[in-house]
Length: 132
Length: 132
Image (cartoon, rainbow over all chains, first blue to last red; front, side, top):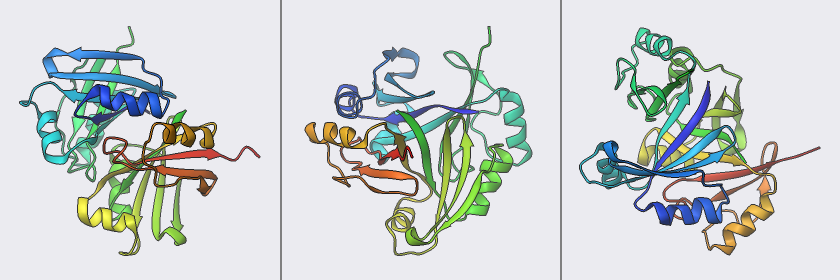
């Protein structure tokens, strides 16, 4: 397992990049508009992980409501796993509440979210990357 | 740079370990009592990083007040840097507010905290490990 990325929700991607890229010195790998999730994201590699800055582009999404309610900050941690079904089965066996009972397609593999109420306040995403 | 650890503040270390170690399957490397910070911590390695679970053992500390006010969840991200003075100088040049203007001794190197108001809501710790 490794930390794939840490998702940070921000009001304005360019303002956040002035701090994370320019002042902190992280490299900027990519900026992308993800239309179906109504967000703009910036990926900044740090070791084997990424800092992912996320700016909602619509007020209607879950992450936009999170930003409105809680303000800017860390939204989730994504952990890469070898076998996502096994990981979910183990969590279910220990009665940890899941947002996704089954893996669903993500951008580069299959993903599932664990509910923060089971993880002591932390929203955790699991990802298993396609091996092909 | 790499993510050294993610610090998660919890009410009860054993309850949190039942989820992060037993249900999620992260290995437990160490449990330590840090008397001068009035916390108990558990380190769970994940790739090149660690999840650090932190339980306050006194109500008087900053992290205890954070827990009382905000509830359980992610408290800070720690990034390992090669040269902490250079990193702080760069942040100062861009007028990012710092909690520690100069590095101070940590457990295994020198550390400094950046103020979350400058980092879009994220408390970031920098660490430069001793090379000796």
